[in-house]
Image (tube, rainbow, N blue to C red; front, side):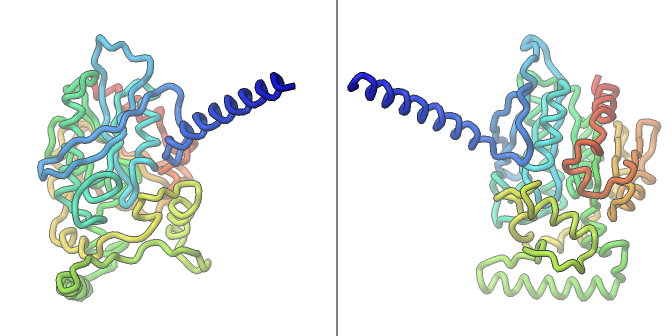
Length: 343
């Protein structure tokens, strides 16, 4: 009897240990999408030119030949998201297709450094892409002559801006793009005129005075905690991604609050796509047919020059569909594009 009890005790302890290990392993995956068995993921850190340490997840195909070098892609966005959300999904999928990929948190957000938190900058967020290119250009399995980027939502605009200044970016995919400087300066659908813009600047500069006096930075309004049904459809779409198990993440600004309110000032005064017409390398812009933001991509595309530029409109897709809808995101097209121009 004692031997049976001892055996059962050992068996129970063994099962508990296995369960604990499995729980720990499952708990270590903190992404909003399912983990792939075909890639490895490594946390990496690198600095941009302003000394801010960026945190990234490096995705590497498990079957790579370590004697060779591979095309590499840096991924970031959406605006207010973290690398555990849409950018990580894009990065993992492209790694499954044979690319070295790096999904990273922008300066002042997620696991990246920078103070004050939840701050955006047209210059620094553009630089973040180039810093990711710095990292990939020096990664042991990446070919520095075959580097591309994927920018999603607001980081689509920053990505396009980076492609205009960083000639190392041989190909850029811009998905469901926002031009953050345009929407901050002009409002949605360019509804804000000069007088309205002046009132906005008065409000934001008054807030700067208050922030300095109080020693804290007031946050802008974020998504509501609950919907009342009267919101615009695109607000409902954002809510259904950021505020539900579908896309919620504890470090995501959009899931938990709002940006630093006075971040908007620099965007009003500094258009990010001033030189996008000079981009010589390849660009693929993707947007949803039903997206409220579609005009940002269409107008940005009209400014581009050259036969290596393409606009792809996804039928019946809204803005948020291109965050995580695997039936709507054209990954095969993206793969084809990068294979064409990263060679």
